[in-house]
Length: 119
Length: 287
Image (cartoon, rainbow over all chains, first blue to last red; front, side):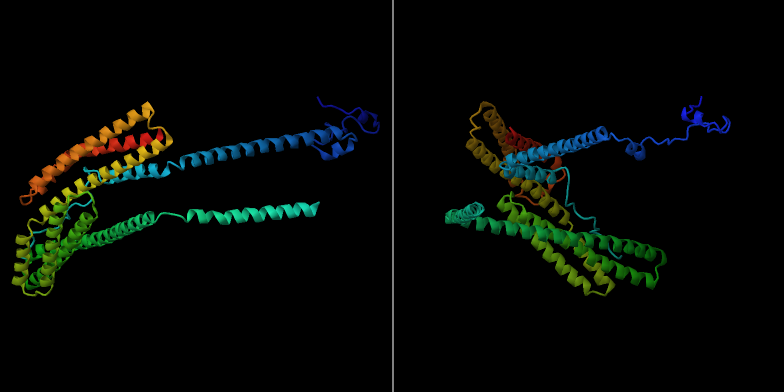
């Protein structure tokens, strides 16, 4: 059922058939023009300001958490700095041992023919 | 008021810069023995770096020469097959040239390979000195012989002389492979010995570090440290046993090369022991 504006019924020169089927109002969800017509914009301003404030607080919380994580990582690196030379030596020893695995031969005798001749 | 604040800021800045300048004078008072030790260590590190660079350079040359040899080996095989089938003067001349070239390139490969073994033997610190000297001498003598053979072969043009030169080489250098195997046995044992020696030094440094922290006296750490010492001692016993066997058998010719085929089975227990010791050392640092 179409909704008819009560005001349109006051137009006596227009027949029912000629009247628009649907109200010819703007179907947009948000219309700034409509809002401007409303003289009491204070609630709108308060709501939009609160929304912006909440978004700003949200971003601040996220960035402060990232800084905390970075500080924790830096602190861990500083704590480990005293062990680094010894740990580095242990790591290098482990790598050296892997390079000298007796089951792997890095310098095998080349595949050359020691017995060839031209006869 | 503003001027007073400005003056205070300038004053404090001036004072802090003076303190920063005073700090280096305290650090300059170092004992001279530390300087001498650091110079000696720098020389050793520089020599090792130079050796490592030389080894890398020779290895690159060796690999390119080996590729060149393998390519000319194929050409020689083709020429030999054609000579066998055709028996023409052209095929004989082609075989002469290909055979002579192949002999020259083979000498290049062997010279580079033996030089690589020589450099690696010089660079490996854990090899017993008398064995190292003996095998270095043998390597140098073989390299000299092959260089002389190569120079002689380059100047030969007669087919019979080329054939004789190649046959002489086959006879004189039939054991060059065994020499290489003996050196490889020494390198394998020497590298593991070097790793054991460094592990021992690292263990002592870790003990000093834990003592300074006051942790070495804790029961758990003391037990862990003792277990690490036991593991290192076990590796030492195996290495000492292997070296004494090698020295005894190296009296005869080429006996050291007999270890080569059995090298993985013989060295693996030492390798596993050292691997365990290094894991223990890493764990000690993280306790």
